[in-house]
Image 1 (cartoon, rainbow, N blue to C red):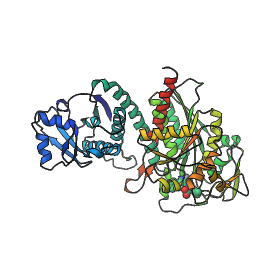
Image 2 (image 1 turned 30 degrees about the vertical axis):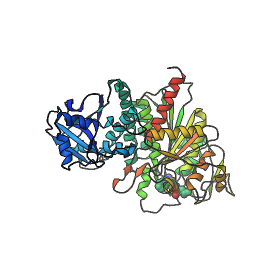
Image 3 (image 1 turned 180 degrees about the horizontal axis):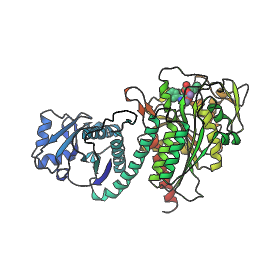
Image 4 (image 1 turned 120 degrees about the vertical axis):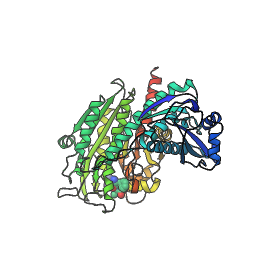
Length: 503
Ligand code: BES
Ligand code: MN
Ligand code: ZN
């Protein structure tokens, strides 16, 4: 979808459809009022008849509204004015785009961006409108034999601002949001692909192709390289699988070589059976989404490159399947990690931390400014935070605050969890430096504690995205989260970098 920005009166838009809001109960928004005035009370009359109460998400399409230049007027319910906040704004945008996709209008002008949203400015409203509009029509149809095409899909959406002085800011923001939307789409597609297609080799291939189309560098380490380096934990997970593991290193250079990179590490388990500690059959198919951390790293790097951020960013993706097999790792096996620390693998289903710990140690050689890992790491995190917030853990409070703020700004939220030393003792082992599991209590915290032992030499944050990376049930599918959070984090850092260099 194409986006553009404009300022002007709603009644004067020569457009296939002009979208304006109506609050509950039956209160016209400023843009709707403006149309109503030239239309001699036409909208007020429609609303009075009871066809549009203003319920959040309701829509009513009007033709032949007198004295306006647009072909159609789409009324969108906004709910109660006093309760109109982030979620309501997004829901209203979603309803508008859904309806537009079902009508003949292939182009529209959206006035919802002019509505006041508490605590949010113009940039936020523009970015969210772009993101919501780009992702609302998303479907993953490529493996269906008959493609259900939308007959006349919305092709072009114009977003409005109240003053001409706001045009420039809105245009920049819309551009950036389109890059983020593209990153979200890539992350969703990779997540939704079945595990027989999206293997570690496939992820490596996709990383290479993203690198070549966006001017990035991509290196892929093979099993022999991991062996030479001493990545005993990552290799232990790969042992049960017939698919060769890959360690993908994708580098975006937007700043000079001396600038320390932001490193994003994404868990890339393309299918998690649990290994010898086999998972139950129910819903095991959803473990194809166990590479959504990796997908979010690829999507974010793509967005960063498209936005030409003045930063260096490296994506590291340890990727393998976790399968049971004759050579698979057994509960009780002890392995030596790249860091030199030994691990007793008591549960082969706690494989995410095993691939991540070697990837984190690998980060040291990149002299990172900060490292953020992103992983569908624990079912316990889903129990703690549900499907709303990602779990955030960090060894540095300033970094934690930066990540939380990015999540809030992008409406892709995380919640700060404790990483106190008191939890570390749950990882004690009689036979190695540590065990890979810490028992039932505080499962997401002990997983983070395990990782923290490999992140001592840099500022590090960990996002447990087990609850937010995909949806189950009827709407089963990858969400593309936390690409918006990560892209916002990079944007903020890029802003800080250019301010401090006097640019
Ligand atoms: N990929 C899973 C985590 C997961 C499970 C995410 C269900 C979303 C839904 C991870 O590899 C795993 O199996 N974790 C175990 C850890 C346990 C063995 C300590 C878990 O959460 O059960
Ligand atoms: Mn597992
Ligand atoms: Zn897993």
